[in-house]
Image (cartoon, rainbow over all chains, first blue to last red; front, side, top):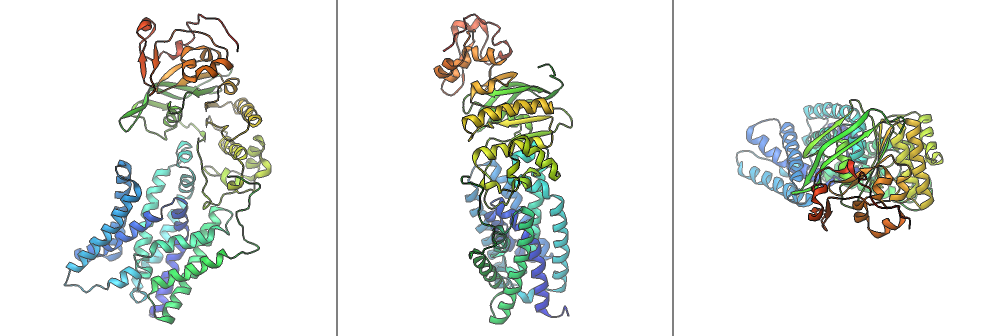
Length: 272
Length: 277
């Protein structure tokens, strides 16, 4: 049954969405969407380098995205340039470097569109195994670092003062981001990975009373977007990545409709 | 204090430098079990920075910080904005750094008088309610050391009095050490054992009465503070320029040189008369 390319894409997409939900919540909470974007854009450089040195694509992307995030951390600590300028420089220069490097390698035929926007045909059985294996590992690690990471997202100062390893949790979180980017690249493409992290999380916020509920809900919404998007992609012959993002957007817009049971911004009384 | 005990945290010659400028330097500061130490001083005087260095949030560039092994800390930061994207009810927020049972949470919230808010979303609280929740969260672990950075901001006057009374009660009940940062002087002092006046360095320290009496205190806080507080006179070795840097007073060099931690002596040289406004 796994010979069916569509089923493989579906399972891979669901696997990615399950992990992207909770990770995406942290991206939203920590205001890291441009950070995630930058890491995702660096994935193309990872692809180029992986082809050049003939190593596994997923590993190449993971390595480059991790390095990009660590580099960003180091650069932002030196504080010479504002963070958004750094992100802009790194995001687009790694993307451009990747594109240029791939253009130089005339001996390989590379389907750029597939990397940029996702390609459901590209998911192999091995990819599927990697996505579910890495995904399960990532979720397990996320549960282990949940408390320090969440406390650090609310207030890094409180977390550190009260003895939680918030900084280490943030580093591990960066690596998990690199992992999900490497895993998600084939499904949604490097340009759109961040949307798979952010849109389901943002959609879930309105219905969630606690961080944990928001994480679970974001996973469910992500799965719905993947299923809807991939079926749409098959039906209308559109690239898989944009189709999934459009499906996620539709869910997000629907969630904005006034619903009687939704938890809105109700407050006991005004202020704050 | 009768039950003042072991030293919980202690800084020696602490200095923190940012962008080539010393925010604080030469800070000697200790908090013992059972005492309330209040840091006062002007904005930018390094109160929060010193507290953060004591807690390990900021790494000191000079000097050292010793914390009692296994020290448990409850921290109420000066600024905490909870973004709307973070769904937190009051009771979920209580378990941010430690997990507590429902009853423990209810008890801690009851201690600060906000038990009725347990299920409310944090974003909907008023300033005073939010401060009370922050304090409840910090004391829920029954910490050895409680650090409160301007805990009465956004609280109205009666609320302010209540918060200070509460802090005094917490000290009695938990027999913890409390480091309190404040720019609001006379109210704080009523509950305080020791006041440390910071303006880039320790200007003076001692019992509230002695510090209120000191020259440097008056110089820092201006005539208004001098009017509302009883004031003694004592010799002080230096003045401050507009950057808060130490300017030695040549006429008084005999009394102490600039930068020397002379705080513990503040008040040793009380010469003037007590004067009420």
